[in-house]
Length: 198
Image (cartoon, rainbow, N blue to C red; front, side, top):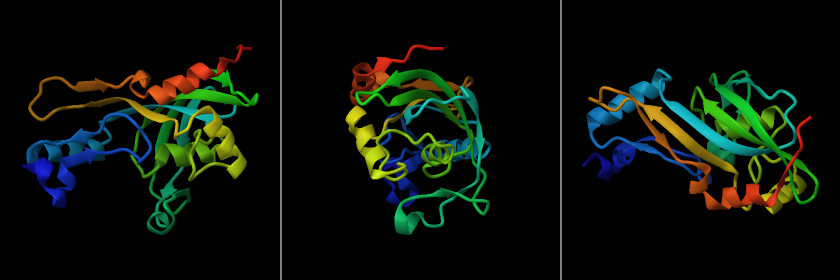
C-alpha cells in the first residue's frame, strides 16, 4: 500500500539524480520507510558510487567537506557550495586514469556519500575542479561538456553499493550494482586507454 501512496513519495527513501544509475531504496511498509529515514538521518546508510571526472587527481584520495546551498535549485536546477548551505561530506578515491579520444585525461573515481544533499557528488567534484563527465549542469564550459559527451553520452555516475539495516533483520543488507549494469558507462571506459602510472 505504501508503494502506491503518492503523498509519501511512494515509499521512496533514497533516490537518485535524474541521469544517475543504480539502486534506490523503497520502504514497503511505514515501519520500514521510517527505519530507512532514521538511518539516513543518522548517516548509517552506505552510499557508494563510481564516477568519471575530467582531469588527473593529484590527491588520489581525500574528503570534501563543503556546505551545499540548494536555495536556487527550484529556479535554476543547480546547487552550489556556499557557507550558508547545509553540511556535506564526500569521500573519494581515484581508481584509474584514462586518456580520451582527444587526449584529455579522465579519472575513474570511487565516491562515498556521508551526507546526502541534492547533487552532492556533482557539486563537490566541480567545486574541487574535477566535474563529472557529461554533466550539463556543472560542466566548466560548453566545450568541456562536448568533450565529455564524446567519451560518454550521459552523466557518468553510477551507484554501485548501498548498505542499510532492514527493519527486523539481524544483519545489515548490502546491495551491489556493478558498473556493468550501466552498459553505456562500461562501453565508455572500454573506448579509452589506460594512462600509464608514474
